[in-house]
Structures are given as structure tokens and as C-alpha cells.
Image (cartoon, rainbow, N blue to C red):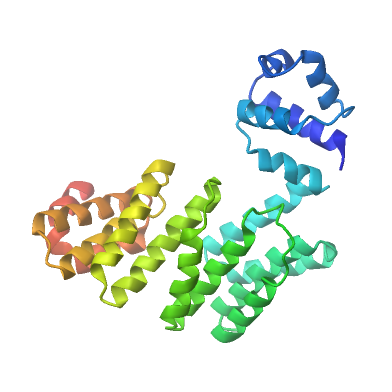
Length: 297
């Protein structure tokens, strides 16, 4: 573990936050201790690192990753790039990026685990492998129990991907089992809580398919509450839309249903989710005609 690398990261984030060494040391330690840490002369204690993390508004896990990986910043950027390409459904670009990285970083077991996860998903999305092959390969990745320094709770993200493929293969019970495993796991790490929102949403959709509308609404309400707590708008539109569909099935009040669809449409519009806007327009126009006319004015 490299004291110098950690010290440089602390100094980098201190300057990014516009803090002096005196500012960072206030109510934490002596200023000279900050200087020694930033110069790579000593390691900070765990308690000090947590205090620095709080003052710099940088997750303490980030600093641990910096210690473990010599080129953590680079690897982290590659992982973020892969996830962004996945959101944009640019699967050919994902495969090209992975091929390049595997030739340069073949010795890093955990990094390769992330690459292979994305490789099998992209290959499945492109129709190059069947669903059962993708599931088998992703399950094999889970046999590697190396703790993840680059991406906390990595195995749960892989399990979520397996659950998604199971759902697409109409293996509902297998999918539900994995979503429940994610939902019941306790962690306050922000990214994991965002994953839990996705799992709750996907679980609610499967319950809807099974005609278990009240149970579906319960999961949606949990996801909505968590989204609001985290200030996470990413799935609010889909969650309100799903809840409205459930309310239609149990013959809830038209006013409540219309309000839910209006909320959904608002977030689809706000987040530029044009596909969802079009679906809402076509399927739920009778609930949305007033809202649509206001947005389009």
C-alpha cells in the first residue's frame, strides 16, 4: 500500500473543495499531521480517514480503493464508461472497450470480473449468446469471492443482471428469488440503495404479471420512499406509472389513478425519457390529456 498515493489523493480533494490544510485539520488533528500525510510520510488512522472523508465529502471507500489499486482512477473511469455505454445500449462499443482492456490488464482478477460481467450482458443483448448461456457465465463469476474494491457489492449487481435475464426468459420464480436477496440485504452505501430501488421496481413488475397487485403496490411504495430519501429521480416516473397500472387493476379511484399518471408523465418529461412519454401518450391519454396540453404549451 502506497502512503504517497493516498496522500496525493487527499491533497487533490482538499484543493478541489477549496480547503487549506488548516481548514481540513480543524477539530480533527494538528495541521502538521495533514502535511505529513499529504507528503506521503505516514498513513492516517482509520478514524482520521473517516473524518477526512466527511469533511471532503468523498466516500471513505474511495480512499481504500486508491490504496488497493495503483491505477484505480483509470480503472474506475473505464467502469463508469462501460456503465454509461450500457445505459445508451451501445453494446458493440462495450465489447470493443472490453477487448482493449483485457489485453492490457489481464492480471487484475476483480477488474476482469467486471469486464466479463459486462461482456456477457452485451453479448446477450446483441443476440450472440442465449439467455441460459449468459446466466451460466454470470453465475460462474459469482464463484470468485474476492472482495470488490473497485465496485462495492459487485456480486449483488451481477445477481441483479441474472435476475433481469431470468425475467426476460419468463423464469419468474428464479428472478424473484434474486430480487428478494438484493432487497433484504442491509447496506447504507448510496449506490447499493439505488440498486435496491431498481430491484424493488423489477420485483413489483413481476408481481404485477402474477396478478398480485396489492403486493406490487407495497414494493412500489418502498421504492418511492427510498427514492425520495436519496433524492434519486431516476425511476420515479416508472414507479408512479406502475403504481397507477396496479390501481387500475384493483379499480382504485379515477382521480388517484390520473394523479399518478400525471406524476409519471411529469418525470418522463423532466428526464427526457421520450420513449416512456410516447407510451404514456398512446396508452393513458384519457388520464393525461390535460397534463399533456400544459406541457406542450
